[in-house]
Image: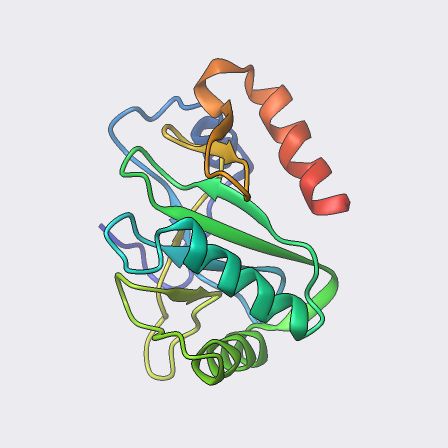
Length: 170
């Protein structure tokens, strides 16, 4: 189900999602006009969901000046979210366009279910939503091996939030 454009998640709803209090529902959000992060979404059945391809994606980003990325498992399906954090707000349209062009120039196919770029603002729609981090199935992954470092559900919500905020700040 999707909410209308003017509906906003409350702090309480976000905290409930992070606390894994919605075992049957996942919350997501759509892009605003600016963002301090981008996500490359790689589904579990994507051709890019293998370590060699992940290293190529990270190398392409590093060559473009994006040295730090953080790899997470986005859900129990096993898909990956490769987060890129920025110190300042960046236009979501510019961010999506530049990352999409970069991936295409480096030979990656950006498409739904394969490799998606978020934020994903729509031209004549609200755009695509992205699942909020730290919900059931979320995990921190080793970017070199793909192995789970920490499972979100094995830690207290405050510890998980602290770790995610630390990832943003590094």
